[in-house]
Every structure is written in structure tokens, then in C-alpha cells.
Image (cartoon, rainbow, N blue to C red; front, side, top):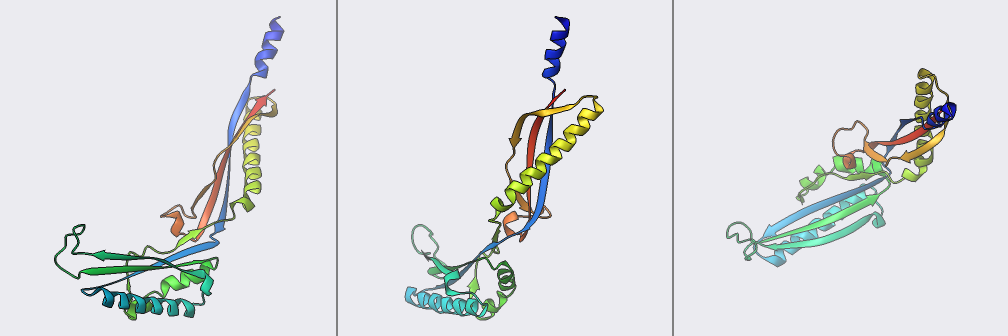
Length: 211
């Protein structure tokens, strides 16, 4: 009876370890919004300025090498500063804002375009609220299986070392949990969405029985 109790308790022994896997990747999709404004006292004149600026922006993007299907037009914003909502009696009455959105897998081209935006300013386009492009890594499913395998292997290595140090033998998996995948800036500094170079990270938690 005594031996039976000892053996039963041995069966409950286990060790939980975590395995980490990281991989450096590069964004494969870029979204570049360009928002520009015009203001004045006469709405039709301000609209004319916006239309002219829109034509300038389109020519600029065409010169940068973007296909027409990569460029879309966002909504037109119109503000009347004399309205009750704004209550501003000074400055121009009408402020119009138009956004042009570039969406492309040519990430390097978007980086070059961002550096060349001063050309638009020199042509009189008033760019507003520019926060830079958003860079996205869309191929997580391509790296997921290999990274899970890598994290699980790292967890097993740690468990084997623990079993060796404790004088036990590593048994089968008792329980396993896959953590969520994280996409970070490669150097983990700043906003991940504004970084072309990224780091994918996953942590798995695995429990092994000890014999």
C-alpha cells in the first residue's frame, strides 16, 4: 500500500516551461495617407484650390511610379468656421481638407515617396496632420507553423535541463498553451505600425510529466 501511494504521487509530478521564438520580418504592405487643406472666404474658390492641389498630388504620385489602382480618394471635409459649431469670427471662413490614400505592397517606394513630400510643399500643397505611412506585415500565417515548432522545441530543451537537474526523467506533454503572436518594431522602440522592420514573437507554455 505504501509503494502504491508513492507511485501515485510520482505520477503527479510535472514541470511547466515557456519557449520563446522570435523572427525578424519586413512589412509587405504600406498605406500612405496624404491630407491637404485650403482655406478662404469664398467656398467655390477654396474648392477650386483643393481641386488644383488634388491634380498636383496625382501628378506627383504618378511621377513616383504608382499605378492608378494603388491610389484612392478619401472623403472631402468642409468646415464653416462661422457656424455655431465652431464659433470662430476671425480667420478664413471655409476650410476644406482632402485625403489621398496610397495602398501598395511596394514598401521601398513608399519610403522614397515619404522623403520626397517636400516637393509637394514647394508646389504650394498644404499638407496637414502627416503622421507618416502605416507599414503592415500580412504574412503571419506563413511563419506561424515554424515559429510554434521553434518555441515548443525551446520549451522542451528547458524542461529536459530541469529534469536532469532534479534527477528525474522527462515524460510526455501534460498540457500545452500557445500564447498570442506579437508583432513589434524590430528594435522595440516607437510605434510598430511606423516601422518597416518588425519582429514577430510568440511564447508557448508546455507542461511535461516527470518520471
